[in-house]
Image (cartoon, rainbow, N blue to C red; front, top):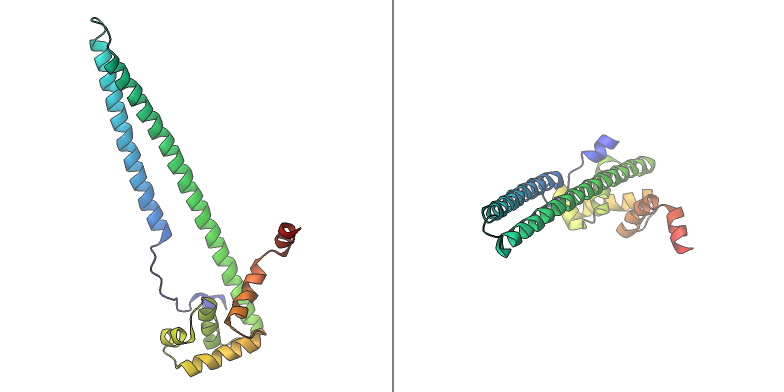
Length: 187
């Protein structure tokens, strides 16, 4: 049943793959941090060179300020790199959590559809309904008549013991929400 549910047609999405976007962002951030680091080291070296050149004649304020600013730039670069690493790690954890939630939802859908003894067509229609698709959208996506989709949805609702699309979705959300966590939050 999982293969049947997992292989159902997907509703159109206009988003990029999160992993690819995340890798590009990490690469861009790494390049920017490297450029900042090189600039900071250049300015620090230039400041030290200016101080060394003025050692015999007296050190002015300008080369010292150059070094202080270069050290601040270097420190900011290091802190920015660490912060970027933490953000990327958080994004990876969020992506993993989302993947686990998707897996849990897929298993739950598989279980319920099997319990309700849905046909393949009913499963496809139910999945589109859970995703929030309207009857005309489902009919268009499946290449079916709207009357056929209405009939199949009626069968899904009857087998699932619900009256409408909202209640269908609520069955799955209720199963995913930990009742103990809700009780703890209320009391």
